[in-house]
Amino acid sequence: MHPCEWWEKLSPSVDLQDTRLYFEPAAHDPASAPLLVLIHGATVPAWEFSLLVPKLVDRGWNCLSFDLIGHGESSMASGPYDHGAFLEQVSRVLDALPVKEFYILGHSLGGMLAASWASQQRGRLLGLALAAPLVDFDQGRTARQLLKLPLIGNVLVYAVLLPSLIIRRMWRYRTFDRGQFGWWFAQQALKPGFGQALKNLLTSGVLNDQLHRYEGLAKEVSKIIVLRGSEDEVFALGHKQRLTDVLREALQVEVPNTGHSLHLSEPAFVAKSLDQLLLT
Image 1 (cartoon, rainbow, N blue to C red):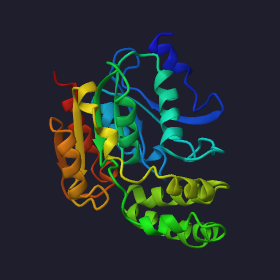
Image 2 (image 1 turned 60 degrees about the horizontal axis):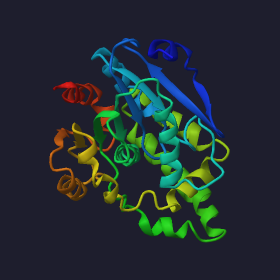
Image 3 (image 1 turned 30 degrees about the horizontal axis):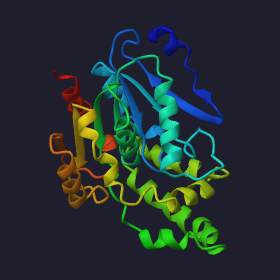
Image 4 (image 1 turned 180 degrees about the vertical axis):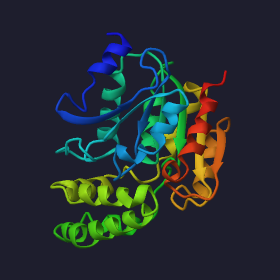
C-alpha cells in the first residue's frame, strides 16, 4: 500500500492482535515528507505531544503518535506492564508502517523503548531523538516496593498514589494550554482499570535502571539527539552523564529553563532541534 493511501485509511483506533491501540496522525505531506513516530512516557498518553506536533508539521514532518497499553484510549492489558510487553507493542506498530525508513522521538519511558527497538534493527531507523530518556527512575523506589505487598499495595494505589499523582500532574501542567492537560490526566486516572495498570507498571521493573538498553545503539543508528531540560530532576545530570558515557557521539541539546516536560514547555525549541536529524 502506498504511504499516502495508508495514511488516509488510518483510523483513530486499530486492532493489532489482541490489543486496541489509539493513534494520532498529523501530516505535512503524506506522500513525501519524512515520518516521525512519537512514543510517550509513563502515565501520560500521546496527547503529551499535542503542542509539539503542530510545530513539527510546520517544519516539514509527518507525525504519528499512539497510546501505549494502559494509557489514554488504548486497551488495558491483562498481563504485566513490563519491558517485554511495551516493546512488543512498539514493534507491532513500527512493523505495520508502510514506509521502510523513518525517525523516532521518544520521551522518558518512550525514549528507552525506542532505544530498545532500534538496537535490534538493521537500517530502518534513520534518526532517533531521545527527549529526557529514562535511565533510572530512582525517585520513589521504596514506595514501589510497598506496592507489591498483598492488600496494602491496592490501598496505597487508590488512597495515596492516584490522588497525589493527579495533584502533581495538574500542578505541573497548570501553565500549558490553560491547564487542560491536568484535567485530561485526571480523566485518564479515573478510568476503570487505570489504577491497576499503574500498579503493574510501577512494580514491573521497567522504571528501574535501564542504561543497558542504550548499549549498542550507536552501532545501529547514525544520528542520535539527546534533549534534556536544564531543570529536569527526573533525567538528572547524573543520569545524563551515564548516558553520555554510552552514547559518546550523540548530539547533546539542553533546553533552557524547563524540566521533564520539555516538549510541552518549549515545543518550538524541541521541534527546531529535530532539524538536526535531517542534516546529511
